[in-house]
Image (cartoon, rainbow, N blue to C red; front, top):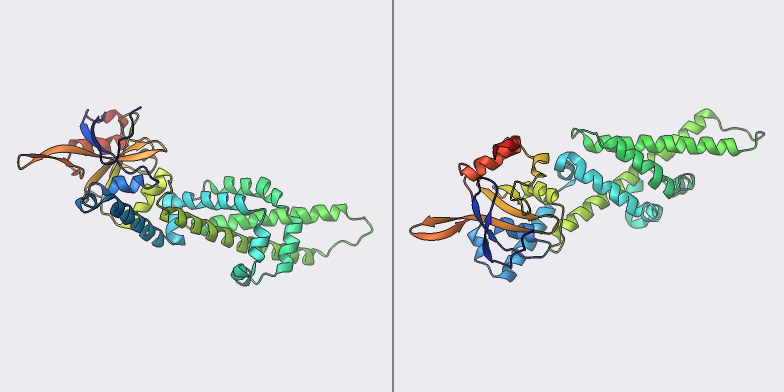
Length: 325
């Protein structure tokens, strides 16, 4: 395994793509090394001092977060990023969700669905948070893993409602079975109305958790010390309108990073834009890659690759057929 370079240090790196000799450039080792790596190819960034560079990145991350609304968040990787974060948030707060959603500051979630506090008290008496965590969430996760991008938000919301409704109905049925046989049973019509009313409470819970998950996601993007998953970084760049294509090389193999194949094809890139190539140390760090070129009898490092560069052509072909290297 190769060592991470010091900040702004340059060192040769031979890629397995046509055995091309590239030049690595060390980046800042904070949680913003990805941004540092993708901005280093631009002179207006390189001429800044380190304090100015980090302030520049901080502002870019804030701008990026501010541009992502609910709909755009659900568009990232066909909604999978948003759904995973909603599930994660649900698990984190399910044991305190009643207190959070009944807090006066969150009253809008109740008002929107004409819900009342007493109904929530009944709901969480019927459904213990452990049941939600151990039964409802896993079922929801499985059901929504195959959802399509089209109307993804409404689809997972309705799925959440239906699972909740079935669970509430079973809970009420179980309660009735425990009652003394001489105790009069609830009228069917009334029972269905109660199930419907309690099931509707799944919607404000969904909206509350979804809103919190999006807020947390945006705060993570804003935080210059926060490391994010490589696909999240790469997916949200569209909202920065950088007008570049980004390719990733695995530092261990010198090959195109295998994860690129999961979300990109050869025609996924805009050939009107230059290409930036970054070196990825898995879950640790990013550096910028460039090539030595001679301009006016002077050797410089070019970090903006053209679409007709053999290195770029071969990389893009590899996304379609790995035998082409």
